[in-house]
Length: 313
Image 1 (tube, rainbow, N blue to C red):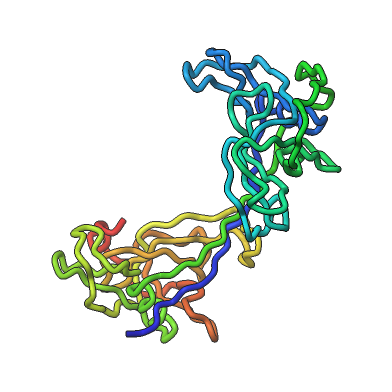
Image 2 (image 1 turned 90 degrees about the vertical axis):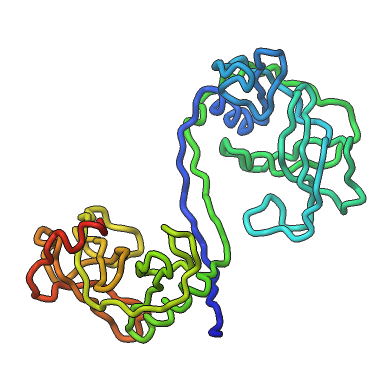
């Protein structure tokens, strides 16, 4: 059996969001070394604050200052910190109920080892030297043996409040396409397109998934399809993608390869974007060393009759 492929993948993008009055006050407060919660309808002080009551769903905005000291309610030791985490040396993830709050805040505790952490440990905030109005303004928590810290008397009114944040979202994972798609990818390296036929409905699916999406039964019979096919539907792309060296506008289309019962998607080239149409007959264009077609171009054949591809729209 051929080796199943796998590869490390990263999905990363900046996530930009605006802030309502409660979240704005909370993050601006962190910038000013003040921790604010919000009082719910049942009298509890929620930290971090939320904008809607978790019980009644009513909007809430009664800001309450709490202390930068608190108590660990539960914890887990992180022996191998990862990129982007609060500390580069081993630390504890902790839920801390700040003095004056009724809920706990998740953050990192800088401790010498797991034996130094327990439920009930008293801690205090270690503020970041440079603060911008983000949760990272709390660099971490550190052990604290004293009484609750004094409050500043803040009402939640600040000059130059934070109106929005940009958070870097990133997901690192290892992807394995599985047996069926591994065979499909390997066939593309030989400039062939191979799908799998369902033993029940007899439809051929490209790319194969190892099971029929209609019947739910495993598929194993390999069937070579194409290389030519028919454009079933398409869209015109007018916004240039970052790190993609293709000039706009261009066309991305669903293409039903001859012999396949499922359309795959690919870029259309070799024709003006405003001349691409449903039923256009196309063929793959390969570049040296590529593991998949660079794009599809018109074959010069007459357009396919609508009835031949209407079930694949």
